[in-house]
Image 1 (tube, chains in turn cyan, blue):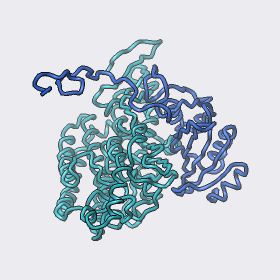
Image 2: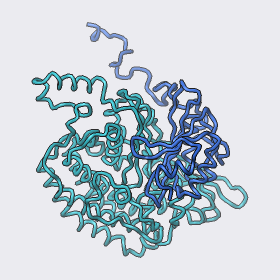
Image 3: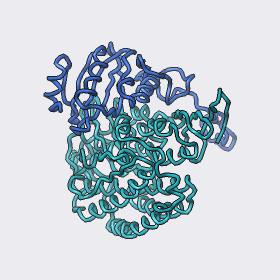
Image 4: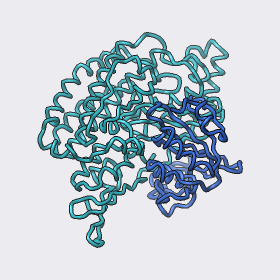
Length: 395
Length: 169
């Protein structure tokens, strides 16, 4: 763990990370230790900064979709969705019902994917390596489904401004349905390994407590905020994509410790399975792209018949789509919390500014608060329970 | 309760209030009024949750940076945007909102806006010895040197490869 250390007075200054398997990416923590106790913990970020927000400014809006995949790489479809919603807000366009329901299905499948990785890696961090193997088995099945759907396992770019990239195959929908039938029993298996496991509870119960008022003030969102007892889920409080029509529970914890964050995520996993099932049953027939030719190019077969379609096709592929001048921020509830893209358009084919409000960025900032006064060994559980994705923290 | 846009107009008669295309109300504030207004919003009007801060650069304007603060009211379940124009320096809101700390560091790092009264205004994304502020509109894309880049033509396929006998024909 120690890359360099020095003694100052009676406390020890030590570096944890940036290259350490339990820091979930390249996160560096500057620790000040008094024996085993953390006196202060200062996160140092930026090791994964790739200038994505600058790159947006030289890409067309459609190219930008592929950049969103790479921010939170465990939630690519959720990022696509937030980006698409902001651009659609600028256009004020209508999205066909099949695409809206399909987006809920995809967003919840991605949430399952993200929480599966989380359960697995958290188990691994705390010494329960078998749960990692089980969780990744199901995740592989899910990634295979994404690959079948879009051609890519992780960087799917499937939700685009104006709707979806293409329609779902009936066989794919059946495979998703089957996956959702199997998954609840697998979640039972993870719970059997962790929920009442005395060693796991020893490492998590009462560890890394974040009080509700601190969580609100620090801008923390997602499962961490809810584990602290704050019933705040954007799918409930500020619904988008018709989430108000789906009966589901926003999971709320009580104690704000690592164990509650685990319980909230596991319960969310089950809620997401429910939501996916509902979305599958709601999925109406119809188009999956808006009919607005300024946003989505016309289908190929129209090009031979219609001069107008050919012009639209040409304009979109040479200049890109051109949202009216203005600004939009449409947040969604990502697996990590409030995620939104602040998009500024000047009416041209390239955005003036795209800024991501990254939930991990705000959540990670609270770590100094949570880690203070705890033990170094607990810090592993805390980092893991905060679930930072450095790709979106650093952008 | 502020009662939406009308309530905001009543509470801040000197500021310009409006509604963005995304349905989020905004208040346009003078740089000098920012701290006072943010304090009132936090303590009296329920906007205690700091969500985000970002900036938009327009190098052709006098005050080139527009800072956009996003606050959220848990009681009203609504966002509020504060807009401030500045040309380098503005008062920090970190003493009011702890969550603003990293956001202000990010804007300082990438845009070069200085936040007076910030406890630790250092670069957050880029190395400490970095020169310039890349998210400014006049900063070029792709101008920076990239470490460990192969500059010589290893595979003999690049445009810089000398034309060999089998390639020149």
